[in-house]
Image (tube, rainbow, N blue to C red):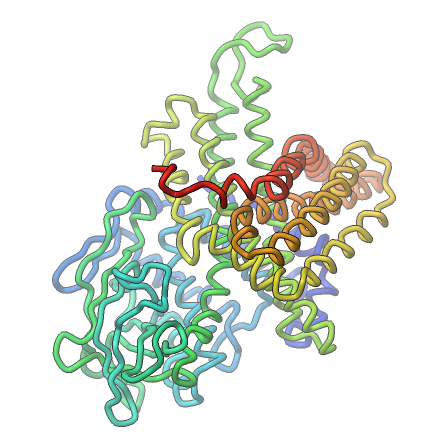
Length: 594
């Protein structure tokens, strides 16, 4: 059974970020550790009691397409009704539309819990939250009043409709047409890979659709964003006639089978009625609000499934008796005593803790960027959050694949058997490096928009802050000192890699693109080392002070020490690739590859 890692999440919220920092945003002045702990406890109960038990049926039965609409896996519809009734759809939304206005950092913690317990289920409220975000920022007052209250309450859900069969990631190639019809538009076209594009949870689905108004410029500059409800909404808020959008089919996938991935057809006859969001031809800009939210949340899915894989693998290792480990023993012992099993478990555990710290730190920067009183500090925080989002998305999901694979390995041959459950996390997490932008897209965003555009200023400021924080750590406890020294070495490595990247970028951007992913991984590994060093320093101080939770803090020190010895050194190899691995990519003729 899944157990939400509430104590570790509380450590991040209360000891790494801190209650005072959370309350520094006026909108969160009422935030308290007690409130957060209460929410986390209830979330843990819902995840283990409602979502985790139906995770298996989502995988084995999955969603089913019918001519009358998609039918979700057994238990999913009922779970969503409980999810909405419990107020979980309202956590991060604006109180103006029925939300609770909680910090993004706390919401990020909850997203992890939902993702670990049942990723396929969690994708529906995740996409709805993204649609709410886009509408909140770009919709008209009338659109907000019409759609947001029911989306926030969970009465309706939302989607993000971007790609098409011929377009893939190249959104400038989309062909869905928007034909003016009075003050509204009629849409014609087809969209693919639409998560929860149809389902039986709610009577209405609010699609956020990219389309091209007739006569608009070609390419991405001619794309607009539209609200296209599955069911039209009358002026009094009641549901009216069915709109011309239908689910043609759903995809048969490697994982997340409980989440219907739909092909949607718009405008079989007179066209699907759509409402323009924001200004014409600025749809991609508006959609990026939604995509940025999604990228952070998809990034945390990588470590959420690693956490779940760790729990299952650790439980297995504590009970599975195989062979005689090289320790004094009278006979066979559980495999957790084997050195390599310990190595694999510590790899999953320590890297997951580093990723959790990175994602929640990033979310806190977004909280500050959204509402901190001082304008300069607000801008700096937003810039840092924007810098970190592609690292969260790319590094955490790539790690998620490796770590869930280790979860299978720890089970041995039984891990390859579906009945043990270890394989599902491996299959489910595989999509996370692909959707909401592949790892290469995240890396290109990092080096192009976030580092190349400001000549590395935001990254250099982060490195300065990391150095200052590490130098301020004054704790000689061996594990804490090892973590500090590894992080200091990592900062120097990342600084040199950033200089090499900027040189390549200025010479020829395509040279920088050749090593963008290794650079992103270097950044994630080093920033993770910095946060693990901070964690170790806090843990060592608590132990020295005689904390009643010394076992928890000793475990934090063990994780930090292992990260320093086994994970942080990977940055050196990644940085060397980023420095020396350009020519072997750009100079190779594509004809020689295949």
